[in-house]
Length: 185
Image (cartoon, rainbow, N blue to C red):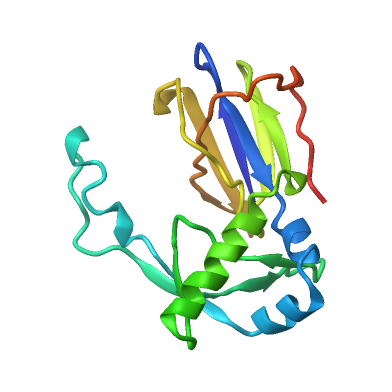
């Protein structure tokens, strides 16, 4: 399971993508937190997109999909565990009081944002990025720059393609000039 993204045209400024290793984020949790999260599931929901693109003339769907996923996912090949929640889609942890769910998710989101779990990809014209989709990140930021037509992407999972989506963000001051993909552990 993976995604490949190719960019033909870069924005005039900015354009870095941060990839975050949810395996490293899970490994860095305390043993007690790992034990607590084991077996929990969370509701993922796309309903928050309602109305977001109305000013572009894009109509909302009648309903947006939702699903329950494990909070900790095990890689199907390596057996490594990864956090499987994100601010964009995870609404709550099932089976616990909402205030407890909110607190745990807030902690996990802050923990996952640690720069120690990230690598930066500096896009240039004709760059190609490939990443393992079994972990829920790239944890990406706002985009500045090329229109979606400048991007081509495809997912690879059991031989069937799925569209890939990526966003860009301006580089932070002093960021390096590399153009290689660093794969987080």
